[in-house]
Amino acid sequence: MSNDRSTSPSARSVKTSMRSARPAKRSRRTAKPASQAKGAGVEATVSFDQLNLSPDLLRAARRMGYTKPTPIQHEAIPLLLDGRDLMASAATGSGKTAAFLLPILDRLQGRPRGSTRALVLTPTRELAAQILDHFRALSAGTGLRAAAVYGGVSQGPQVKAFRTGTEVIIATPGRLLDHFQHSYAKLVGLEFLVLDEADRMLDLGFLPDVRRILNHLRGKQQTLLFSATLPAPIVDLAQRMRRVPATIHFEPKPVPAHGITHRAYAVPPELKTRLLLEILRREAPDRVLAFNRTRHRANRLAEFLDRHSVP
Ligand code: AMP
Image 1 (cartoon, rainbow, N blue to C red):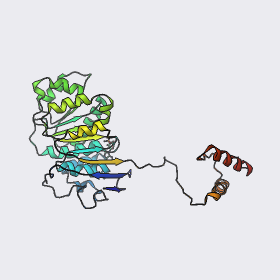
Image 2 (image 1 turned 60 degrees about the vertical axis):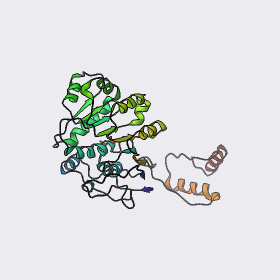
Image 3 (image 1 turned 180 degrees about the vertical axis):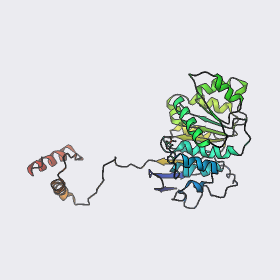
Image 4 (image 1 turned 90 degrees about the horizontal axis):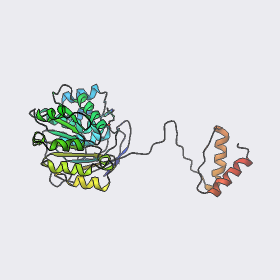
């Protein structure tokens, strides 16, 4: 299915397709996942309140200044609250971090503490640190803990994070594999795995490491894959999910640059240059760039404008 929407600050077209090897478990929640709702993707949910997130998380979103969900949040949060695996093409800036953190936080709130239940894999330490900051802002008041695990810093605090069962670990692949050499990092109780910026992990050559990590895990966790683009190796990776994932594609709609207005004039071909001349005379713009299909046409237009004293 495919549809356009304008529910978010940056309107874009959204295509959602869902396939499932077995039916998704219905949760205690009453709201339908956006993509299963009739007319899915049509402007249905415009406020966070309708997403069935806990009051703590709604307060956190408000504190962050989020007035309404971005399209990826609107689509992904109900699916994730319902336990679906997900493959989403969404770039940085789409609000994807909160799209996975909010439902994970919501579901972890009701779970016992002291065991690592969510693992977020991300390509760089900077991204890991950013996700940790985002987690801290959204989790305030929930009592849930997170730690970042990446190379180039002492392993001591990271070992402690594993040993004390920090609920959410945000890691880069190489350093995580180092920890996997040790028995304290088995992650046997893992419930959520997020592969964030998967295409960047591919670009940076981390895919073999990611596969090793997947082999190490028991495969029982709900898996969420976010990637700006979905090249074949990333789609292959998604095939390894426990169930066929719901997929969400966000295709940015081309928009004119700030300060540019688009206008179209329906005019017979023989009047095009006359119309252009008239517009240039009336509006007297300082500088104009006129695109033509051929060099010959560009020359003819330049001569025509010269003849009519357009400088
Ligand atoms: P991300 O795509 O996750 O890197 O997020 C990009 C930026 O959007 C971050 O600064 C977020 O704090 C912000 N953001 C996330 N969700 C929303 C929302 N619903 N409303 C406004 N801003 C948001």
